[in-house]
Image 1 (cartoon, one colour):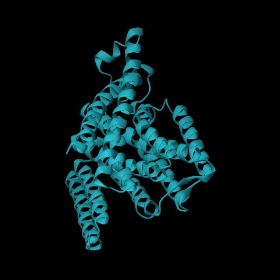
Image 2 (cartoon, one colour; image 1 turned 90 degrees about the horizontal axis):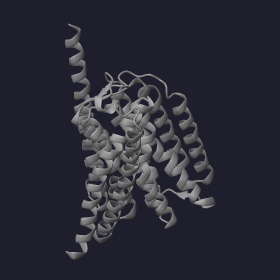
Image 3 (cartoon, helix red, strand yellow; image 1 turned 60 degrees about the horizontal axis):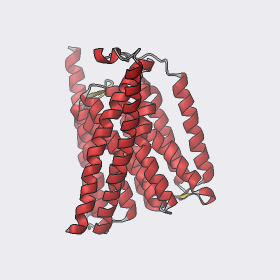
Image 4 (tube, one colour; image 1 turned 45 degrees about the vertical axis):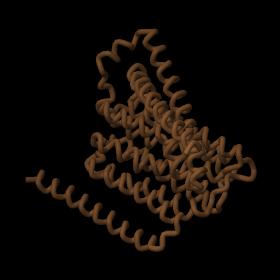
Length: 361
């Protein structure tokens, strides 16, 4: 029992630090967007997503240096799946997430294209040095694009709170904002690393496979900053930050983290396991594609859609566990799950059609 006590304490401490870091960081990001006159959606897609993606970057690079390519790749793939299904799902249960046209027209299609490109480049079982350079180059282009379109005006981008407005010309107030951002990033990174260390130790004691650790425990641990940040943003009514954080983080996970890991791996490249190529990478791409119809449905992610996303993740994890334990009826279970989600989608579309018919009278 004593062997399990320390990793459990690490996990609890990591979660506490993540919540504290998320609160500091989201406050600093919102204040910064108002002072600089930057739309909050742009802050979510750049500053916030970079801060909350730092745990994935640190863990993945550390894994590369320790010769664990599987953990580095599975961490990114698992984090992207978690972000879409769990972070967006839980945030939309708190409050329906209104989607700005910028996300539908620009950011989601870009994420879809990058996800498909990563899948294609990884299909040989190796993400080469050249592929890493290409991903970093795409990151630079995307950042320049963000800066050039920073003055795009969206509705309700400056719905400032009164107390925030008072900080605009106050040097001390601006320093406090900077300190909140830095403290938030430090707590998020430190908390995530503590949580991941505890999770890895616990998983090792339980005898779990490294790839599964990366896809589940490590991915969940490093994605908790995105979860905390988006939940806090949803409670504050900043739905553009909640969504922008997820889309921006998923882009950075692939462009910055996979790109950096491929470059750090040198000429040998980043090894991608066949199980990731055949199952988890396609599932990551499918979850990204699944967002587009949701975003198009009257410009928001509803609570019912959020419920479906969370259900998908629960059954994804269940499938992993049953596969590892050699469940005899896994194929039949997958057919049953496919039918279940098909029915959910039919009910969802039927409900939307019924609402539309009622509103037309």
